[in-house]
Length: 587
Image (tube, rainbow, N blue to C red):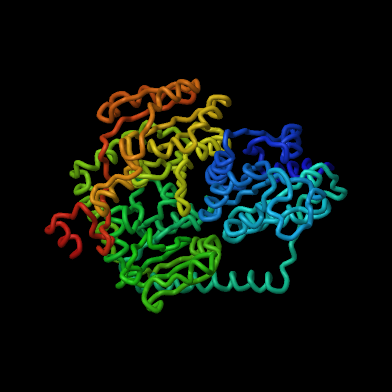
């Protein structure tokens, strides 16, 4: 087989039928192979960053592996933000980059560039990939491709990158292999055996802890990374009536109206009730695939959940090195596959579980009281608007959310339905993520999708509107336009004496009329003031095909509740009335 034909055939046999990228001389052989394969579909972006984010959205929405490609030099470099996004959010993506012919290399030490559009993408990508390699000989490709796919999709999942010189792409593969076994001996076998033992030990420890605990809580993160495991853990919570709190990335695992859903934890912008329940009310935190980084539990790490026992299960041993309690006191960590521990819990019978009968009722009372406090905060009108918009988008399979104030409003207030995925750029926090990620999610699900953006974020990859129009993708795009980079503007108000450098009109930032831009691309659009959203948005968003709704917001929007620096994460601004605060803490 031609080498690039083999790569495409290999990936489509693994379930990848959609390939995202941008054509170029150094990747042309691969693109030709995609076009010729009847099981493969080629989707061209308008900047390679769009292709990389589309692959991330595809992987998130499909719960599977994705592929993106680019030509050499600037094309490969443009992929890197999406590569980093996949790395930090544990998304299995195979990235393929073109490269100049191997015979063009001069072999001169210190030579800055070997040839036109050549760059050492392997060295650049190493810090943000699980594995990356340049293929120097045709016979390498079989083992390297099998190995790369295996690495991407096992353990803590993540991206891999294969760099393909042109002469290697057009060469032949004499003995193509599509399912290569990797022997589990030596260190690998020991690691597997250790993971299995750790899973058993974690299971026994959790069972024993539940017998003693009165107020257990499950903290679920994106490390619970399969639908089966997510469903299994939720079933376990339902069986024993254990409240569930999620990370932002895991928000859509549990429907918004589920009686055991107690919100997203967040050191700055988490739900008040999630922060209060986890930080001061629980006596046992069962943490599955959640990092407990400072964005989740606050900068005063050792102050978090001081009165609770913490049991952590994660496949990433480095994540578990992060101590929560000082000196790891009353804290146990298990490097194990969360899926294996959840399987054991599903089969377990725990008749002696020592939970307070009223514990879920107490959590519900806290949630209702704190929601009432937030609902009376005038500055939170964007949250109420997001809740209303989520009803209009209930029929979408996935909603990609960009980075900024609208991200906070969305994870705080979007009413996600069962089976509806919310896609975020978590660890990397990349503006420009949502539009291409929603495109990728559409090709993963085959169903209508949506994206929620701010005016700053949408302009990052606005050119992908042409992709939307060209392929007539049924995507509802909502741009919340406050004419500012609102989150940084809030920071500047509090810490920089209202010097709004680079964030507002007249200070180095401005926004366009997005409805006119969309119409110029051939996409139907509507521009409305925010207070007309409830009346006008439903009729507009129910139409078929791609639509862009631009909502004009007040200039000075804010994201609340917010934890002030140095405050405990359960005491956020605007502050809870003292009598309510003290009563809830006493429950």
